Image (tube, rainbow, N blue to C red; front, side, top):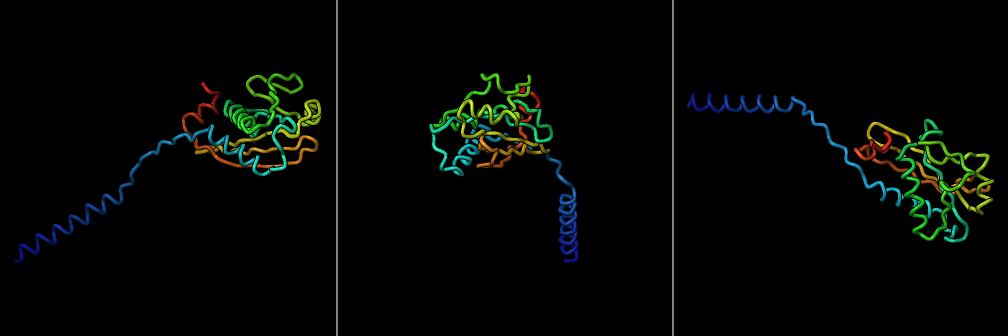
Length: 183
């Protein structure tokens, strides 16, 4: 009997020690961040902007789109900022709005590798020239694990924000490549 109790006690202590050792050893697993569907996220942003301004009717007046820019340097953008602006504009066009293609206009300040930036002094002039009701614009900020994006629909006549939508994109490999230049 003494041997049987000794064996059980030894087995119990060994089991507790093994479990304790496993619990103390941290597992160093780096989770792979997966991209979200950037197109779908851009379409949700556009739909949200449109839901906030039901009085803005499709076909009534054209809309302009500006490249989404880095919030830390409003003169800089990236392929991500340009593609998000393109996708939001595409969604507005799909929903029946007339979109003015800014890349074909010479009244907008265009910097190589940066995209179209709506200069505040020229927004009203460009909007009036195209009879535009509003401008879609946005910013993004790069975090460690995500990109934080703000999309806005701005009334061209007086720069009043009509609608806004904030969202994040996880810092997956496609998002990282688009921020780095897309190569």
